[in-house]
Length: 319
Image 1 (cartoon, helix red, strand yellow):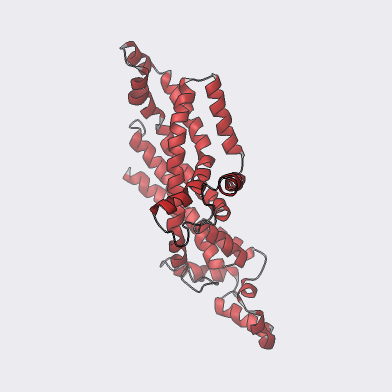
Image 2 (cartoon, rainbow, N blue to C red):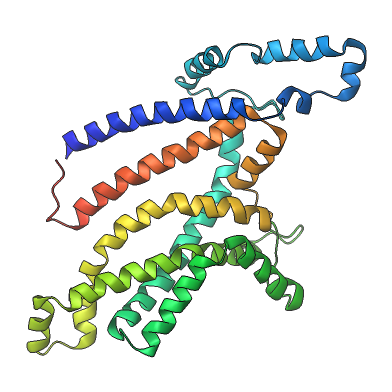
């Protein structure tokens, strides 16, 4: 396994380098000028274009893109992703501040999705090709098909504006900070985000469990007098959940993509909200830092999926 991990890490490093080049070039090729977003129009009245050009030289934006990339890469290899054009703070510090709220939202959503998906998938498998199975399948397809932002807006309209049972924005209510208040603010965005991945999880659990229920060892256990609940919990379900481990690891980047959208709907102060605001302000260093974070997350999740599959299934050998 050590050789496999070393080889995958080497491949991941090469892929990451190519991704960084692509991200850097695409960000620089985007229309607009970040200097014009940074400079106060009053500051350009006297100096005019000379002031703008001086600012571009100060930021290194007057150099060719390959030269800019090599200069950025030298600093990035030492852990320095530059400074935000907007706040003039280190990019790593800006991202680190927004990371905990996003992790909290994604972790809670993943937990809720599993709590929803595993029982529903089991029920659909046990009652396959019945009205219960078809109803669960319809719910799964519905959650997959409806955009998360639409579900979020609908939930805000019903649960906040009409019923007033849950808050719709932020992580806490000013002057009412506390665990209960934080939980109330977390419920709505986490629940909507969980629905975006619970649908696929239900289908994977159902499919895996159906295959296991048709296996010979299940029929042997039933012939020995094991109850249906014991067959499911002690025999079929553990084996059926093996593919789900891989799917969960691969779905984490999808969670982040959903969080980017929902953080705008629920004014959640996470990395997604930071990324969208940085794009609007053409804050190149922060945009690149966020994109690299997503790239690292995808590479880590892919490697973790392979390793976890080998850990939970002894029949798999990594070579």
